[in-house]
Length: 205
Ligand code: ATP
Ligand code: PRP
Picture 1: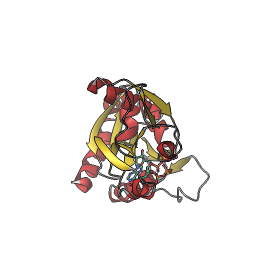
Picture 2: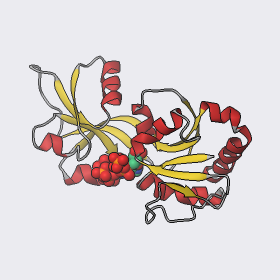
Picture 3: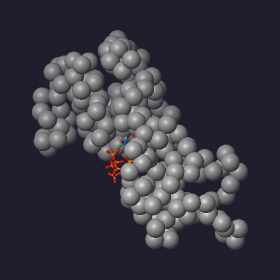
């Protein structure tokens, strides 16, 4: 079985859960240059990849199982996997934020975000027309330099918003990391995968 895990914050929080489930990589993923890591559970390998690539690997069956943030799953347009378990790690919120209410009737509001699809869907549900400015990071900068009226971004402590004079305006979604499973793998490797789900469910409560 191959498990794809998002690099960075999610990996750091997922490794202790996987260890309790009996899966410990032979090499430190932060140190190793290897892309496929063997583990203490001889049948399981880890691939550590960019967050946004995890659903793709799982949908196409390149990984049987994945660990990815709900933010990434909301943004992903595809339904080639199951989402059986909330791992309750890397918890934060997806919010609309800005410098305050913008008074503006003359043009569409501009919203800067890495989450273009989720943002369009959110405003479409509210019946509000907006223009999305797609960014890949440092969203908080956009309202400060006149690139956008608002941002849609992740907030945990609120420190980043505060440090940049921004305030949370609307809550869009609660985010945490989820276990996702390729649909065919769920059938073909049913015992191994349900066993993993059971072990992780016991840890996450
Ligand atoms: P990449 O480097 O691939 O672009 P990234 O910079 O988004 O990814 P991280 O910042 O490590 O990578 O975030 C990965 C995931 O961690 C996000 O998809 C989200 O689910 C979660 N996350 C991001 N920021 C926070 C935060 N401040 N608190 C808790 N969880 C977070
Ligand atoms: C995330 C997110 C916010 C920040 C929010 O960025 O994009 O900028 O965390 O967390 P806070 O509310 O606790 O301040 P991250 O730290 O992952 O930086 P990066 O996306 O630029 O790598």
